[in-house]
Length: 359
Image (cartoon, rainbow, N blue to C red):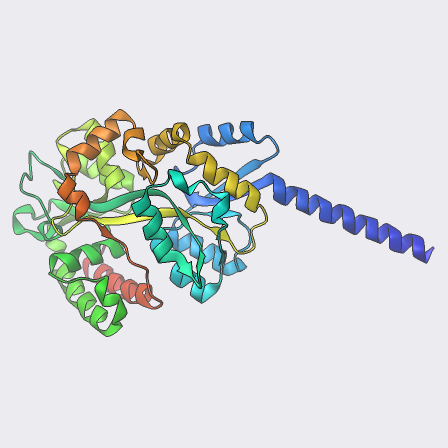
């Protein structure tokens, strides 16, 4: 009887183990940005791989790190943080695992983006991320109302009093630092110097409050302000400006004269993910040209693949061409890895600005 019970327990454990393994192999739990997993692509992927089901959780950089930190890298099989949010998070929280690059068709990726991501995310000789989509943060303006709008500092130009907008997040801190003649990324290696820069930027943005019609919190808020004419210019994601260009070609993305801040969203494997094979299948699937076109139509961003710009929908391609010259592309400022402590410093600066401005 005891032997029977033991065998029965063993069989039950084996079945449970197999069931868990089967679930792990057949479910891809994707932690990504809104619009980075359009239904059309999920349906195509599941049709090609009928043994895999895709479960999507939409998030952002801060939430992705928080979720993975809380679980030690469990709960998801593939995540998509930006390239500057990986190195420090991995050193501090150990939430990712190295990629097997032999499983990924990196030959289809643009060399500049692949190399930039590898440089930012290599730890002890292991690569932790590859690029997916990229874009910039900068400015947009209605050129019929603000024809000379060209730099971050113009958001605070008295001639636009009550007619500009910004989002109180780290991007405006960095952009304003550049406008004041500083290089915030270079100062990351000297946090005392970086704090001095943040103090100057904080004072500048508090003094700028009379220029700000509203502090936007999402793309819909910003779009409504621009289309209604309540504001003539704003800090923005380029994708928001591209969408508005399609509705009003006078509204264009403006790469700041100091250089548009450039991000690359990536693919990483959470440390305790259980479906690496499915994750690699998804990465390679969305790199295929016909799927890049679907993805870029959804995200508004450019894929980090050869000819990515040509795979944009025609309206977005026109918006990109209206925004960028070759000189603007050469002047891009890629976000640098964020050292431990920097986000806390930036957070305190932003809280001080919000308290003083009601933002």
